[in-house]
Length: 306
Image 1 (cartoon, rainbow, N blue to C red):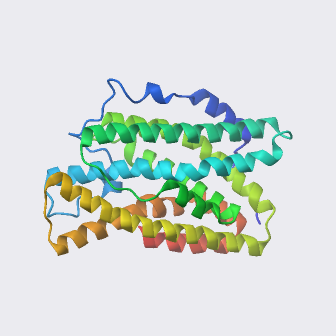
Image 2 (cartoon, one colour):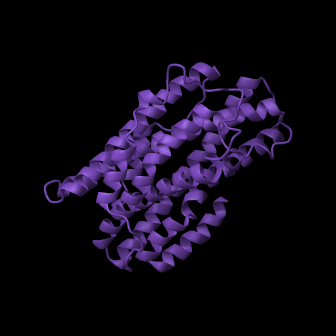
């Protein structure tokens, strides 16, 4: 295993986290309402444009459905990140105060994000008016993920953290066409996930230090198994979103159009949640430091999810 190339530390992440420190109550609720006349998600993630048989109104509705699923999926993931981080922090509670404080803030912020996304869900349902079916339940997803090797789980979390950074910086932060309230939620989430990406890099490094080369290879296999599980779930989510679109708009798409919506949206989710994270240079650098051949393998896998 090669040394990881970064300047991350528990102390730096802790200091940055303490500077950010926002409250859910300050960014959602009251007069801060979602504007359903505007898209919530950038087209780079929503990918409604290829569905040329949908009019502008239907595409906007699908964009909103995808945005709801986007934050729901983050909440789903954070349901297993929270216990994983706490388990990682526990063995050294009395040995390294800064590390312990940084990881406990990591866990606290993930709990806050779950609260944020549940609050958003209520706001969305009130404004959208149509129920959207979601994959899950979260408890079963968390159990399935956490049954894997800790390094497999840490790699998945690291992918998610870098994925979040890429989404916000590449297609959300400077996108003037998106609803400002939804952008605000993503901005505040991104502000804390920036520290989480650093902390999870350190967690990957610490867990891998106790693994043999063979165990690292098996952990990457496990990471890909989790990814395949989520890929199947996203195919189901695309079907749920198609149903919600037809109920909300009153559209009755023919079989070919339904297949097209489901296929395009499944591939959009594959890029959103898998490809954009697996291909992130910082994620691949962490894997390369563990096992260069596995980094090459993951870079090739990422192409499936573009």
